[in-house]
Image (cartoon, rainbow, N blue to C red; front, side, top):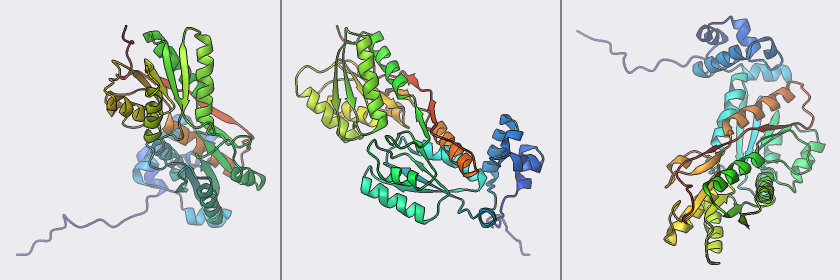
Length: 349
């Protein structure tokens, strides 16, 4: 007797349809169509839009990009430019972007610049050659030239996290100043008076805003003995080198406010190498709350930036622009919060 075993057969791939989304979301397919159309989604409640987008992601539905592209002379692609693809800060942003553009049938083209202006120019040139419909750029610097050229050429760009100096593109960022205020007040509340700010490069709007906010916070607290040490990059290596410079001068600060979590990680390494303990000898606060910050030793107290939401908002703006909306030079500033973990404590008396 012969038996047919179909348990290991792979079910043929089938393209998800708008009917699949409607069935899962329990709405009419016309509602799905409106919810996934930037020009018509205002006709649908936010709760329904969220339900439809989640259903679309779950079944793997995307509008027919080829057919739409032929109708609209669109490539159905969005270029996403990152300064450091190895930095854990950026993947949640990309996830946020994907969660918005994918249900609309767009594909993200991701490029990495390593913070190098020549690489950025080359990457942007390649994306333009591929006729992307718009760009989301997270690699902006204060002395930008290539983004200025793109703006003059009418290229649609939304900046993410960092601005580009005087280039008047829309920007989505976290509230850097408020984050520094939260961190300083936290350290002052613990009793710290000798606070070091390990600041990132001045050419980035994020680190520049944070350094300015630190200076302003110190003016509000004249009792502080505060210092600033700039590091050459937003990396753990740069943070370790900067902390070693400070420690080489003599008495260490009782607290360090780092320009980002990677700089904080480098500072932790420098302290450990010299036999100093965190937070018993020196407290440390990071900035961003990147993935795994809670797994540092000790778990890092840091300012949480809503990275996934930032990516979503940037994607919504670029799609709104592509669909014919007028963005002007708007800036979206999203709130941040302090995450109090185990790397901060009152200073030793």
